[in-house]
Image (cartoon, rainbow, N blue to C red; front, side, top):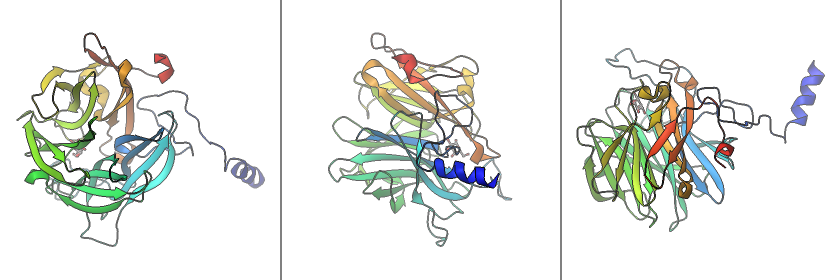
Length: 337
Ligand code: GAL
């Protein structure tokens, strides 16, 4: 037995140990080493033909503090993971790109804090990779955005600072870079009741000063922004903590202009609960043809490290502008070739 195990170990060091052939929402999704993918509340970025995925690296026990008056389940901060892929299905673990700081209790990256929804964008002018996260205290009263920067897509990212963009609270958040290179941060603000859209400085490290309040008193969370056929779209969830609710899609002609709610694009079993998922990102796979992937987290609030993923096709019709996220038990991008 010993000999056999050794042989297997040696023969697989350079080969892939696991190969996925289709997306199977809600099932354990393994990386190329055969380990469960650990990238929650993830964001993606394409750079030089490779996709990179960044997510909350959730390790260890889920904790509900003794003082908790609501379900603020959390795991200790272990950093932000990075994976790379050419096909969006098979992901290589590139390591923890933004590391926790266990020796500094004051740091936002100390295990006692909360780091959520990392999103990374590339700045063509500065040639830096810029990460924004939701930087929280264990009781979720901090409501800040944290910014980190790196020279490489796989890190290491250097944490710069956290702040409230334009003095507004910032919890669930995402980033979007428009075709002209201008970047925006969308965040659940004003106690999660109203969404703020903050335009960023040219280096993407700070809010530039212009922002708008949208979805006023509509309590939208988990924003995921994408562009199709010249219009801006935002997929989001309602505000029910780790529990699922109905997804909603909205559209705008101008990113900081008026947004119009379209409705729920999910179809199939449990569509009214977003299939038990919550949005985190929409991947522009082939935007010209109207093919996107909607990425959701299926939170397991009492064992957050075992939370699963639900990735489904988001199909947009150019003529009508209609969008649908249909349930699939098992699917692949080849289905759309
Ligand atoms: C959700 C949010 C998650 C996490 C959770 C904490 O509403 O989308 O990212 O913050 O609340 O309860």
